[in-house]
Length: 314
Image 1 (tube, rainbow, N blue to C red):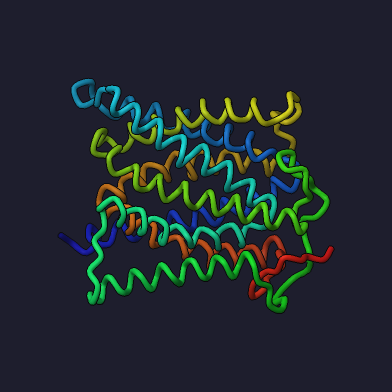
Image 2 (cartoon, one colour):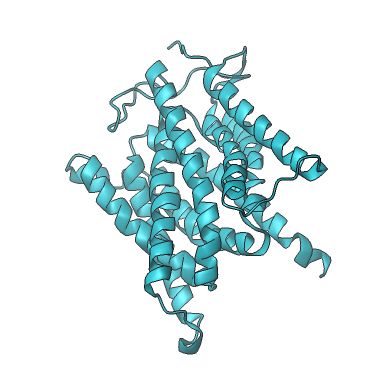
C-alpha cells in the first residue's frame, strides 16, 4: 500500500471536517436571518438527492447495480432516519439556539459515544492493561468532560460581544441565545451527537448489504428527503413563506450543504467507514471544533468563552 492510499482516508476525513465547519458557519448566519432549520434540512437533502442520484445511476451498469431487498431497504431507511433526519434536525435547531462554535464543540461527544456503542455490540474490543484500550478510555472521558464543561460552565469572555438575540425558535418558542435556549440547544446537540454515532455504526451493516457507496448515499439522501418533508409538515405551521428563499445566503447555504455537505460528504463518509471503521471516522470530529471556533470569532464575531454558564446576559 502506497503513502497516498494509506493516508487517503485520513485526508478525506480532514476535508470533511473543514466542510462541516464552513457549513456550520453559513447555516448559523442563514438561521439568524429567519431560515427554518427543518425546511433547511428538506432543501439540503432534496438538492443532495438531485445531485448524487444521477451520478449513482449512470456510473453503474445494470449488471453492477445492487438490488434493494427488504434487509437493505430497512437498514438504509433506519440509517437515514437516525443519522440524517433526526441528526440534522436536532443539530441545526441547536446551531440556531446556541452558536456554531458550541454546536461543533458538542460533536466532540461523537467519538466517545461511538466507541461505547461499538464496544457494547462487539465492534471494538477493550483489554484492561492494554495501552490502546487505556487511551480509548481516556479519550472517552476527555470528550464527555469537555462537552459537559462547554454546556454548563462559563469562564471569562475571550472575544467579541453578544450576537444573535431576538430571533425566536418556532419549535420551542424561545429566543436564540437566551438562558432557556442555551439549555434546550445543548440537549438538541447532545441528541444529535448520539444520532450521528448510531449512524456511523449503522453504516457498517448498510455498507455490507449495499457495498456500492454511491448508491447507498443516493438512497439515504432520498429517504431523508421524504422523512424530513413529513417531519416539517408535522412540526412547522402551514405557511408557504417558510419555503421561500429570501436571501442569497439562504441559497448558498442550501446549495453548499446539499451538494457538498450531503451529496459528497455522505459518499466520503461511507467510504471511510467501509475502509477504517466507525470509530476511525468519529475520531476526526474535534478538528471541526477548532476550525469553526476560529472562523466563527473572525467572520461571525461570536462570543468566545472558556466555557458557558446557565445564565446569559443580554
